[in-house]
Length: 301
Image (tube, rainbow, N blue to C red):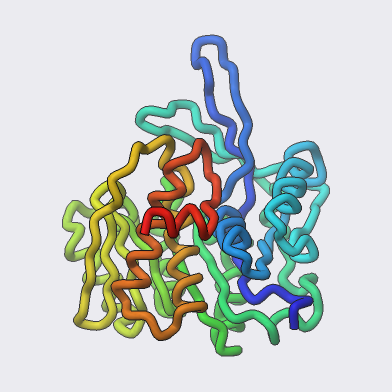
């Protein structure tokens, strides 16, 4: 049983190319990807975890492979492809402005059938989201995998993590993944972008109407977060901290909610929310997307 991960995040691992000096065109590369960050957070919480996705066979892929190994992810689920890397070009940082470079790139060639035989029998929770679900043909493969895992009885979490490429073509995927998910994470920015509206309350109501049985984590940055189950809701402010960097905070919060629901099943919803809000805050105490440890989270509790 210990030979297989109990938590699998499937999607994109990419390289962020972040401008350091726009005038001189100096760039700094960082490993990243929202679903990959969720996997790293879960592994940091000592859960046997895999990231299921495909990366390039060049120096960018090497960096992601090494970072995945350092995070103690199950490398059998990480596929190498002789294709170009997926790059997120962050050409302005305040406010962030970016675009993606990844025509026929490695991530699109992920093959779920090539994952280790027998893994699905051991998987308890699978996470999906990010731009992987807005990039074809990868998106179709991931939605199909989510459906298979759901039929197996695996719990599914979904974080759309809105980006500009999620236009009208993403609508059917958004609805299908919401219908499949046991837990959906969303922010105000996500709702405004995904539903192309300024009426955030109506957007959230529409999202919830697609799957009234799901648990919804609504994150609000420095204002904390709320948890919604059926007609009940719980809200908590964010801990008072000196924020170093908010990158990866949302990924840490959804991973922590999944961890709490997996490992503390008899806790009240407010306790699950408290743990996930603390995890999001803990991720803000360090530069870059650094998964918080259990000790770091508990210090904020």
